[in-house]
Image (cartoon, rainbow, N blue to C red; front, side, top):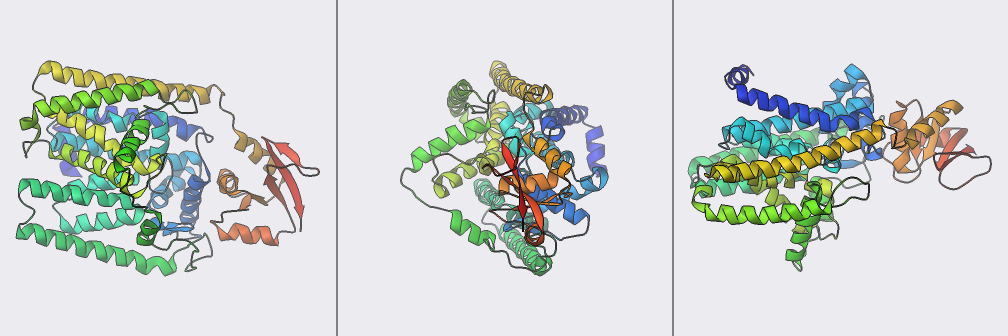
Length: 489
């Protein structure tokens, strides 16, 4: 820590770049911390409930409740925030904003130290993650159990790439959290091949040592499984009726189909990556613009043409290795998704690593471009994109601040609390969200997908409870389009 602080004191421009980056991250994330109705759902509530139970000592959630292929790193990191400010949506989102800050700091430092860019240019190249469109920000600050973490783990792997023990350990934790982290390995190996160090004995020993560390951490985590809470408080050591490992999860979800691979890759790039960059109109106006996608496509073609013209500068091995690493990880993420998940509409949160593509490409261009006007054009294009994205983020905040976005769950919470009921039932997408929003004052059992066993037991044994349903019932109170129906056992 002290060497880092001395380094920052000696680099005032870097210090200012980090401060500006941090302020932009906080500004674009603020709406999701201030307004509970800002794209918060039961999946995120599960992570919040895990952190609450862990902070209270009621459970040991090693993996995400009901999903033992997702290490609960997100919940563990939220515990200090819950201790300070309570188990709220704001506290949960604040912990995720901290993850975002760490990602941005490592990006800027890496692009400056190992990317050949001065700090201000490193910040500009990082804007695709610092200030993305609101929909992408929602994923980056969403408690998904594996959204923002892979970005941080991939960046940390770069900084510990020459320390086998730490590399293997970070890779193991990252892979257990979300398997996308493994994309860093082939990219680093390709870099060693390009530099001519891959087949050296010391490189072989380093990879073997990393593998040993990886397996040791993996087995250490597996040894804790019997003591973990698989489905909430009181379920330590209980088997979860779901996919039991990362490998099994991958084998079940992967659907390898080489037919139409080119078309799928194009769809992933335009719909997935383009959507993450605001280049696709979203149904929840005013987010996303189709014309932005067209402009991004044209800029990509021009970038490839220009980089082809200065290819000797671009391909010089010592030049901007970190930028190449980011670009490589992003491209591997796109290729892996196109090969293993032949879906018509890409799941964007599974493709967040592809945000490294525009960051790496911009960094390479800025690093290799010798013409001042060329660099100025690149900077102008990125800043123009960032202004559009920033405007959309501001518009979204205004919509919530001005009351244009209703809060139906808040109305339902108020109605349930007015009845004084301690236990209720609701479909999955309402059950755990309501439970977390009430701080577990009302424990809502799920009527379909079950992730916390305690609530099911309470509902089963309750002599009377309220059920939340979409269809009308006799004497039911209608609140925010739903009916609160009394159930007598």
